[in-house]
Length: 281
Ligand SMILES: Nc1ncnc2c1ncn2[C@@H]1O[C@H](COP(=O)(O)OP(=O)(O)OP(=O)(O)O)[C@@H](O)[C@H]1O
Image 1 (cartoon, helix red, strand yellow):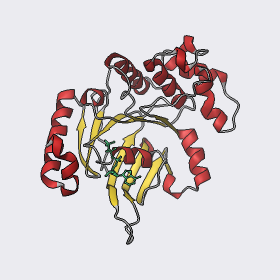
Image 2 (cartoon, protein in one colour):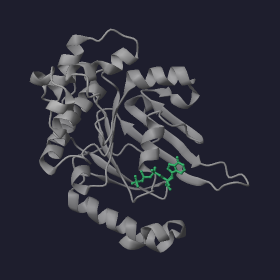
Image 3 (cartoon, rainbow, N blue to C red):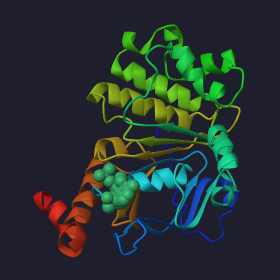
């Protein structure tokens, strides 16, 4: 069951500690703009909060800045200006070493590609983040993470012995094993068929709805699919690198309608995208 929708952005009375992730005037410009080349402003002064225990979908036309937002929010990329906070820490102030530590401790990332190591078992793949952090794998935590995604009986299998949906669930378990404050997912169902995609989304939904002893799980997910976005508590829409609108308690129909509006607007108003967007206009 989805929780009641919350709309935390732009509330001056909010305590920032309530947010798993908070973005303030986040701007990302690619390229140097020197005589040799041009620049692309992928994000323009985005203010956005992802409260603890929330499930947010990020949508927008192709090139609107969704992946860049996720990468900057997760500390995988540095913004050109503005600030990003994870679990109360301003990550824009951190050295590379401290940022890597915080990322390993407080974030999990799931991509469209499962990115599992084929020679390792499911349990060994899930234990990887601990090994990378130089820690002894905690077998109990690995078992628990696999159980969370419904794969308790598959710990000894290698990726080649698992279905695509099961492999993606191993990737989610790997992202969860350090009990991160926030799980980022970039098109997590993009390589799955409809029913295995739904199964994965139900697992993400369950994570947020059933907090464990460590507190509330938070999910931030980029998707192109209105049916996928409708699993979230709210959808935030980007257009041309800026926050265009938000939709609480999304339904597939409402999300699709908002996307159609955004695409039509982009066809009319964004010359730099006109050529690329033409087939959809
Ligand atoms: N490394 C890069 N160098 C230069 N420009 C980039 C780079 N990465 C992204 N961009 C540009 O930044 C803008 C936003 O890209 P981004 O990948 O964040 O969009 P997106 O909404 O995730 O797109 P899609 O839905 O197609 O994956 C686009 O104009 C893109 O071409």
